[in-house]
Length: 252
Image (spheres, helix red, strand yellow):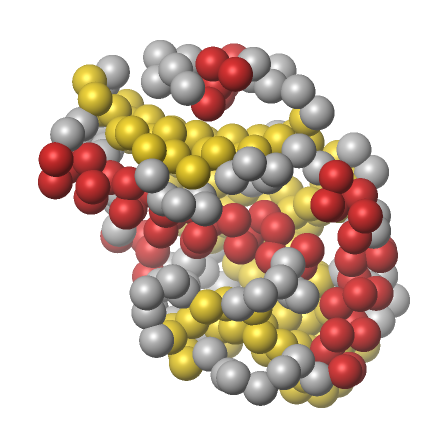
């Protein structure tokens, strides 16, 4: 399955910086823990099983990217649905831990190099999209590096700014974000990506006692990234993770 690339520059693939090797600063760790507590607590996040979300990018009111995701957080199994370059429906069923799986276009299983390329692209897509949904929960995970930048005021509100760099497997460089955490709500309310200083405003939804991102708005670019109707589920029909004919739109 060929993954669309035109809009990826907009959502930060062009903004890549070398990941720092230093341990996270105590101030940044303190902010991370307070943020996770405000979102429902680390224990609740660790217990969450299945996460269902979309990734819909719009610019000037037009849909540019539309993907559907299902993530089994306890086993690493994953389902990604996205149309290919010729608008054929594509499905990749894989495990994010070993990156092995199967890929299908219009119901036909891919083999050889096309399959390998589809799996590689699906994993890259997972790594990119998941940041926009859950990165505030993963600041203290291995491969995520924190640097406290300082305090900044936006629209009369005080924010702690933390530079968050996420390692990219197989690459010497990582994705870098400037995260603005409100001292009032303790939530990540804005961020900029890499060298682009334009701010994306974060909106949240509460699901199963957890706060997860729902929408991101960048008024400067007249752009938005929506997570759709985010779900955190205890049980999911096994077919959604094994059968390419199933559709996540039917998952209730």
